[in-house]
Amino acid sequence: MNQQLNELLLQSLETELGGVQIYQTALDCVVNKDLQEEWEKYLDQTTRHVEVMRELFEKLGLDTERETPSRKVVRHIGESLVKAMQMAQKAGDPKAAEIVACECVSLAETKDHGNWELLAQCAEKLKGKEADALKEACEEAEDQEDEHLYHSKGWCRELWIASLGMPAVLPPPEEKKDVKTAIGAARAQQSRKGMLKK
Image: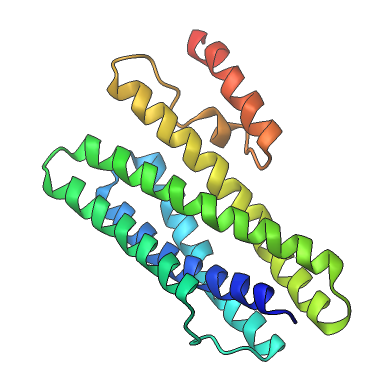
C-alpha cells in the first residue's frame, strides 16, 4: 500500500477519534431535543467508526498509533473545534452555543465525509485483501457519513434562520426526507418553502 493511502487512513482514524470528542462537546451545547437525539445517534455511530477504523488497520497490518505531521494537524483541528464550542458555551447564550456546535459538527463532518469518499475510491482501485478490507469498512460507514454531513448542514442552516427571527423548519427537511446525497440535500433545501406553508 502506498504512503499517501497510509496517510489518508491515519487522518481518517484521527478524524473519527476527534469526532467522538466533538459530538460529546456538542451534546453539552444542544438545546433542541430533536437535535440532541440526532447527535446521540451520531456519537454512537462515530464511536463505532473508530472501531471500524481500528479493525481496518489490524487487517492491513498498520499501526494505529503512528504519528505523522498531517495527523497532528487533523488532531489540532478537532481539538480547536472542541475549544470553540467550549468558548461559546462559556459566553452564556445557550442558543448561540448550539449554533456554534452545529457549525463545528458540520466542519468536522465535511472532513470525515471527504475521507470516506476517498477511501471508497481507493477500494475500487485496489485488489485483493486490501480492497476487500477497505470495501467492508466503507460499506459500514459511508451511508452514515452522508447522513451526518447533510443533516448537520440542514440543522445549522435552520437554527441560524430561527436565530435571525425568520420561520425555520425544525427538524430540517434533510432529516425529514432522510437525505443521504448532495442532490437529495439540494432538493430538501428547496422543499423547505413548501414545508413552511403547511
